Image (cartoon, rainbow, N blue to C red; front, top):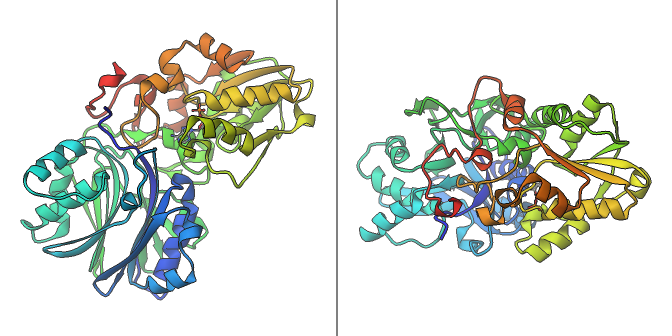
Length: 462
Ligand code: AMP
């Protein structure tokens, strides 16, 4: 069995010293982070020491309306959007998690994956702790509330908790008088600090700041705890390994292209990957098409570098969520065509280069190559702006177990034949790395090279 709960999430929080509407700001923040998880969403606010919250399955716009947002009044708030895989999608696992314990109340929102959650949970259960969900966030909450008893402040307790939990976590913790943000020692998942007037804001991605008049202050550093209260903002740096391990898949697929994470704009990283791909795998062709949306920036880069004309090859139905979000294989396949339809006039009779950001199971590319050929493409050359995904992720990106990863089981030529392409080329590991290298972070590329930055229980990977 897999010792992991896979979650892809987004978090947003504000400690509001001003007169703007805390819950609405959080609502719009979550709205901008909706791409990070479409399964459930929630907001918790601190109303003079009482935590009010609403969380449900569904999309942000479906869950919150004026009545709910008017009820959620408070001077600080945290919010969460969540996507998890089949079987783990219960309403109880929706976040923020709100708990009462001997020292009071707190709400927690977490993006990432704790790799030793099962061990910690077992130990706590043996000591009498009762768990109500299957989420590793509850493990963090239980540990934090226990450790809190021995310390004067919650941040001191969190410091100790961070020496116990392993894995990826960008955390927001709201107590009656504080808002705390923390990023795991490897800096795996993103977390950024913003400021609106005198108020501090936190978000998984900067795209949530731009439209809300929030200026970016800086990224939370790996291993850093930030505490905001009525005295202002304090930073506590906990020990970190020599090398960080930010998730490179955030740049490839997960984050929004208009976000800047750890100093790198996602669009630019993808565009550069397209340029590199054109250099590494040139092809004689008539047009370049990008698979919307995550393949578009790389397709522009490929077209600019190769001199092959870029055309809008697909119409995307905006009302279908990410293909992966459909939990069953059948739905995933149907979802591809529901979501994307080729534009015949741009394709017919042409030799097409089709750029996508990744091949995971291979379902999407296989279907899209067929769609392009059905629309009259003479040849379809597939170029992928990430290296072959061969290993499962344990840190919060939903890549399935290895046996379902097409590149974990087949050679490139076999994959080319399976998806029906005339040629197939992936960017190299070094090529990808060069798109993100600004000297600020090191990257986790475990899904490509199997070098996990934290020891994981990956029997199935062998
Ligand atoms: P497939 O090869 O059919 O499994 O799906 C690959 C497509 O899904 C790519 O084109 C990506 O745009 C998208 N994708 C890649 N990784 C993920 C992920 N972790 N969650 C959701 N979608 C993803």
